[in-house]
Length: 114
Image: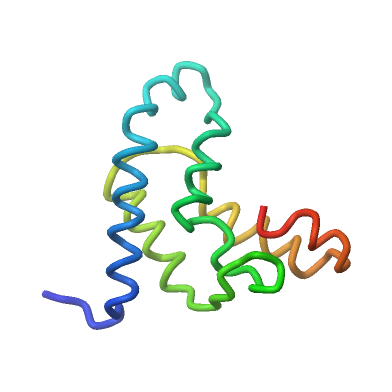
């Protein structure tokens, strides 16, 4: 049964998340598990794909979205793939909002979207 919660822009975002997982996470999963650390390149790539900071204010380099469905898509696709990696939900849903809400403008300019 097709869900009606998502719109075309969400499905396009879903395809981007899937591409990121397949190109950036899947090939490195075993290495990261062995080394017990995720390479910085995974985070850099996530930023290039637009998967980090999309919920941060545009004035600080973010996407300006407050639509939590994008966050849900990242969670769904990560679960679907079975691949562990850079914990994007932790960064987007916990760490990012702390920086956004608890820093001054100078700190925001330095750290957001990251």
